[in-house]
Length: 201
Image (cartoon, rainbow, N blue to C red):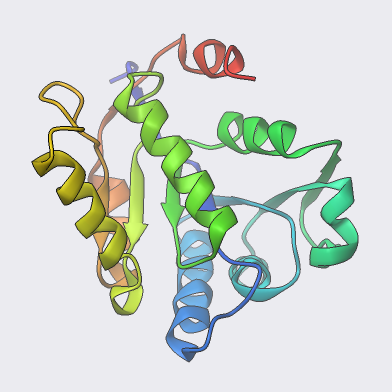
């Protein structure tokens, strides 16, 4: 059907550190390789460090295409991965997030820190408010996101997530479930998605 968006480019939010448990890096590498095998391009934060570097290198190693978007002030701290297919150095975080949204058909959140949490919750807010309908998968590797998922349930039970404003997302406890979840998602095209998000900035 021509009114259904095909998922061709996936934005992955993840940490610029690897974390203390090796399963996080293994999950990032497995996801990057799976994206390439499925013919899905990777869009990510552009850094060479941590899980960001792991997912990007794994995608490239399998012949996949990778677009990195990094603010100039973070280029030295996160050290942009120069081997990506396309690297965009932008002036600020707002531009980075806008371009990551515009260039992606779906989102995956791997473990990460405050920046990853901020990117994830911003997308969840936009989905909740009907600003776009692109799918989002929370990769709950090793139960990393369970405290956040419990907080969402608490917000709902306390009356802060009201009927009609439910937060829509998918949860994958195994990294190998992420791509099948995205493949199974049918997302209606919306000509207003990019315009609606543009007004946010």
